[in-house]
Image (cartoon, rainbow, N blue to C red):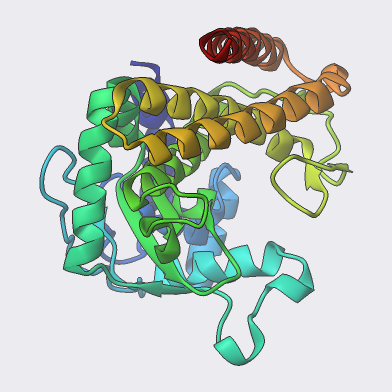
Length: 327
């Protein structure tokens, strides 16, 4: 599986940095987000070995303790993360990347904070995983390969995110486990969040071995993207495009294969329509920056355009069928 090969390459490089640095104390478990954070602390891979060793020496030997894993039950024994230093640091970086006005919620407290899992949240995850296995088993298989921790957030500033420094952890706002104003039940909103953040994780691992943007691309260059109010680098646009295409597919599969009430089915269809438009916006915007894409990036862009054309055709066929039924 491509996801496994990408993960293998990334973690091999991570462990190589830690092995060469040496002397930094007991390490977190293999393929754990805290281990990835330790590698960054030891040398911000992929710096040369000499720089990694120097950084490790200056950082000291004490690594923060990692809580024992709290595994979910059922089809995916993922770690339901408890608050930990590597996760708190990631949230701080995520808040720092937001426009200043979105970082806190004023009298409502911090903009985002890591919280532990309760039985009710774990039950929603169990349902989301069971439904994913039913409607899109390939996505669940990929999540099993790429994601090792699911982190719950409280606060209004962040809906969800991933952080390459803590690769393998996906951060999801607790509110996304509850029914939304749009009529979507909690399990669908969580499945959507996991597919979204898991796809970012997949893209990060893939790009580690196969760059999608040419090396000369200016990382300071920013463009407007479908999912953020602030300009983002081209790599952010690229990942958003992939995420949106996959979200569109997910909602079509849920609409086709999941047991839904009539109102839920309508809400899923409406959500898919909005995602489809945003995905087209992402493909079109990236198409205007095609010179920045490597051949691998071009291939992904072309595949995204083809998939969206197919999805749009499905939407038109469905609309025509509904009109025929009303005639």
